[in-house]
Image (cartoon, rainbow, N blue to C red; front, side, top):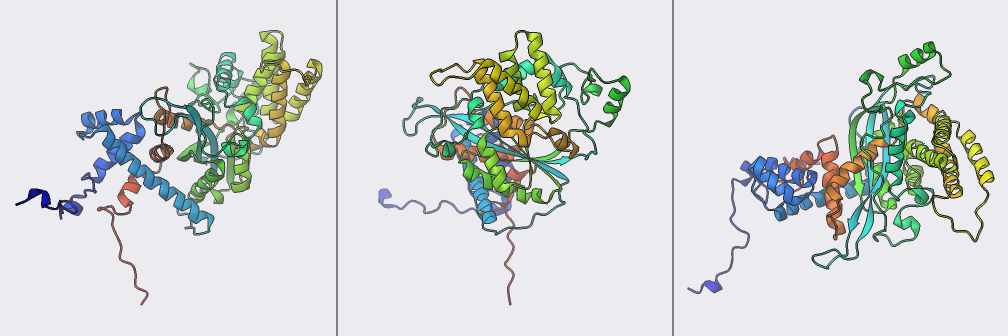
Length: 474
């Protein structure tokens, strides 16, 4: 018999017990598949996922196979996400189910990952930075108020060391600054869509910027209450502490992430908000920093949401401006306190008036001059531009009366969670489609609605999926 003439098996061995044992095409049960994909999306690398799966779950699998399975699910999640957005845009919509949320917040921001040229094999070639856009969607629980529930700034913003570290952390990443007054997406800057932009990492903080974080070591009972203002009597301070029931509590979080342009990002976020019933909520907030495309998305897709400029950003501009014009640390701190408190209380025009007076005092920048970014005239001009561009989104007392948040700390924290998986000094992504897939798995495991497990149970072609016979029209 000529062995070389024997045809190989066409489809492998058919195992009739596969559906009964709930095994997929890779011979993994749903529980094992979930562990593999979640490890691939949660841990910093596929190699680490392979090691921990072997040690903790008794699943012996190579890093390459972890990558294959994780990216396979990531691609399915991407296709499902894009199809939902396409159906929503063309009004092929399913009505949201479940109770209508009381209050909601959509926060958007961007991080950055390192990329390299494709098709060059090992090593790093033509590295660059590319932005990944992230949206955090929260349902909220909280009250509304007749009066401002928190008229004085939180204690953390009155702590010199805390504020200095916060601003240093924010301004150490050059993605902010000039770009905040301009468009920041490649498609709006005139760059080729998909090109790697030379941007350093976006500012990411964890809970550093939550609305009422106290200085380290402050007793828990005092965490939600700022120190009394100098002109307050003890009775007034006590009355203020009693009525503070703000900010709202965050309930359920889901997230959207992509490397696509802002034009494509907007409908993805809008569809997710629609599916969760956000457009039916009584109180709706859309938070962002000063990047132009954030507010383009808000005006196009979330026009009925309250646009709110993240308070941390005007705070940082004012602190840097006070540093540039003051003659001593004491003078800087007093300027910052006065300006920050005025903005917190909604008196942005008052701050603008003082900053414009400083501009007159410092003098103009002549056409032939090229002053450094640290020049006081440049710093003050940036602060003026930021406040002018965002003044309509800085009515913080009204937002607090509505029981809405005034910082985008939720999405800043979320970006840090994304960066844990996709960013690192040793990571250079050379396949855009691979990065997008990992972002989808990461978004699924970071959402609070167990969507990764649900997808694996209901994915098309799954041997454990329950299929229902189509009803006859006869």
